[in-house]
Image (tube, rainbow, N blue to C red; front, side, top):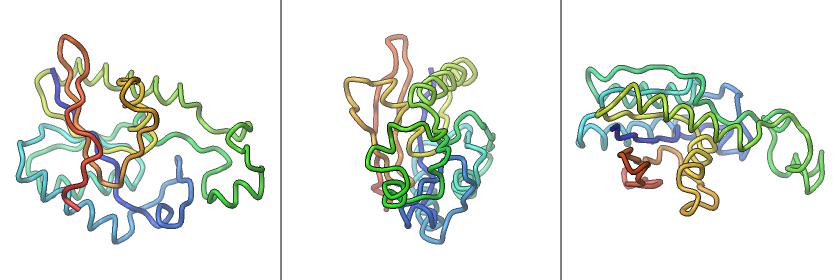
Length: 191
């Protein structure tokens, strides 16, 4: 069964400004590139990874490419199904802007946002496919904070009420005949 490393992309300018990104294609800023390089150095000194699967959004792809630069012969595969949760109308806005525009209860309004259960189903389906395709392999998955957090909540409902992840954090899960096991969560020791 596979070992899966879940990596949240590095910091973007919108992260720094507190703007919702969703499917908006935002690149890493210099801090995010530095974070990814530190993670790449860490991973190059640990057990090797067989493949890197990344979201097709540039902030994740850039993070994956920086990591791969320190992991020779580790292929990168783009996977649109591990994109961030779609933010609908809130993309590009800060919390203060959302409250000003839609009120304190903006989360309860229909603003075109993807539903959490849909993200959980995407995450669960991806992991099931990964389990079949990469038996016995070590797979690094570079994705996004909400996608990873909601997927972990889906896999481990008793452990995570809300799984917030730091930029370039590493979480590791393993699949066995007994199910998924949480090995490491939200580790940023490289920073």
